Image (cartoon, rainbow, N blue to C red; front, side):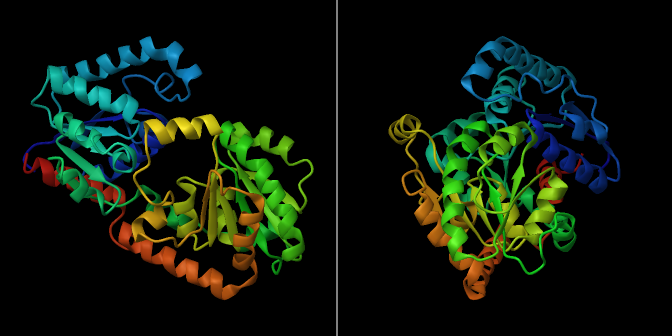
Length: 389
């Protein structure tokens, strides 16, 4: 490169901040430090040297009651980020996750400074619910850094260039260690069957799933002698979980924090998990699992009528393989009897557990495991897209 690169990165919430920090580190490494990075981020990006235009307090929100009072501030921050891009003219702007915020920034940049290339890192899963949205994205994005191998041909069908870089969760695989020490630390016998229970990170998820999971444990108690359970709780729902497990029918330990969570995954023989990113983390730890999810009847009816689901599966492993490798129990099938019947073999039959782990490993390979880290592939894709400077 003949001149230092200038990039603007915009994240809207903590998960995007972590991705942004990993991307910053990779960009600095690949350019031998010849890159200037501006934009919006949180603590992780600040540790990589970003002086953020503003903090993430107004944009890192979800739920109608939280969003509505902050709409004026969110709109101000959208305008401010776009105006900064127009004034500083970076070589490109990378919009990271949080589509309700970052896509609006991208649209405004294209309106006031259309010559600035815009890059989307972590596209919304429009292929699952609203494929027509991809056509609109092509109007305000020049490139998508895709996490899943089937996304580039999907976006190409709508005139939007996309490059497969791999799923960021793959970078967490090296953290799935410490299982033996975890058992010793929490007085769980080395030979005892251990089930990781993951009822979600949102209050709504915990409220819906925890009672069903408790009933599932009561059924498993008779089927799996000596079974121990551990719940990995996010801090903001830990108290709700403690209150909801006062009469838990099996030995229970509740842990918090990523280090404890990843050590649990390494220690566990199987997992019962709410649908989400955690299922990919479990696959990285070679932990067989079943997946469950449930929302209110009214919410389910609205989604089914307004935003119809266009995919056969909810779990990423199954989507990648296009087959039901990991049992899913979503909405009506999310019942304790069905969950217990699916979990018992994973805890008592080593061959059944091994078959699922082999399927998980195949999906992870297709997602890019074993290649360069996704953040490094994303950084290289940006450099390739921009060409010599």
